[in-house]
Length: 493
Image 1 (cartoon, rainbow, N blue to C red):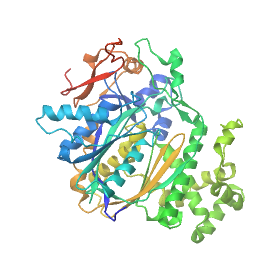
Image 2 (image 1 turned 180 degrees about the horizontal axis):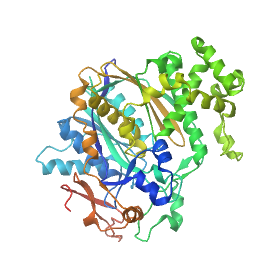
Image 3 (image 1 turned 45 degrees about the vertical axis):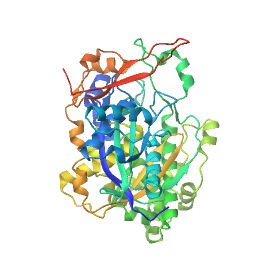
Image 4 (image 1 turned 180 degrees about the vertical axis):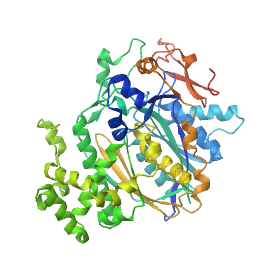
């Protein structure tokens, strides 16, 4: 590894044009809007049957190339992170194909023939794994080339399930290069992984159940998940990755949190990062000599022994064994959880931790869960928020923590570079969200089922769409299920 400074110089966002306001959704199905807003967010986007993870990814990449005037011939790596791919063979090369098509239509050179086109899959962590690979690439053998990382997903849940309100769809593309103009990222990352069984999975065998197909023929990508167990997995793995980063940085975890001017995480819904950071913050506090009295006081207020709390938060918890023993709804941190509840309401957590999670948080509430694009989208929202508030982020240290179910986590430190505003202004986070149409309950249910007339679909910014799906299956020629794409201009309604 060289000593080159590497990081992000550009960000672009692409989301579908159909928006479900969560206030309306709450009224449709009898949910408490106040609770939904506080815990989940304000809205989410729904993809139609002419959109998929590849079209959203290509839209974001094309915007990135145009907004940051990237020479396509300098792109040496195009990495896709997704868990919503519709092809088990090809990956980012599908995105490359759409980009080449659009670039030629614009009388521009297509991507270089030497471009690497990998796909990274690990639930919601695929985008961060792709970013990590791109950083290694530009730091070692890219030469003068740059990398584009695109995280793209469609998060859909069965109607009536506890995950329905956390749906979303979108893609975020990142320009990664040496001497970045937005965010310099430190290597190495903090890493953690554990096998967790039926935490959150998408086994292909579930398609044998015809209930996963709508009358329209749409094959739904509904996951299987276990809510309480999945929450425990998220908290445990992000804690372990943060601990790994502190160890690799050779600083106490409390110091790592203190140094961070902002803390951003994978956010399946608004409240989840807060829950995880309260556990991470308490674990750091448990071994912080300067705040030992505060830790003891919190334990006393919760009525538990401080030694038991340290043991729970410092041990390698075998959640999978607990799951196999029938404890998927059991709290793996029963003693520490009592203190976490007290700590979450304490000014130490609110001022030292939660305040650092506010940047871009309200803007990100509008996106729902973007799976692998969730953390990259929050990073984009953070820059937009800072611009609107006229905050000077120069030199600010950020702590970012990605997560993927099943499960694994990556934590990294980053620094906002001098002159960041020029690149941040090109992100256009709000512009990417503009022009959306709030849909009715009937329209939502039709789109969710994969029904509707493609001529009525709302695409305020135009972009790539699925033109047709191959249906030929003969000895002489086969393209059964192969998706063909085209580029169309903005909303034609």
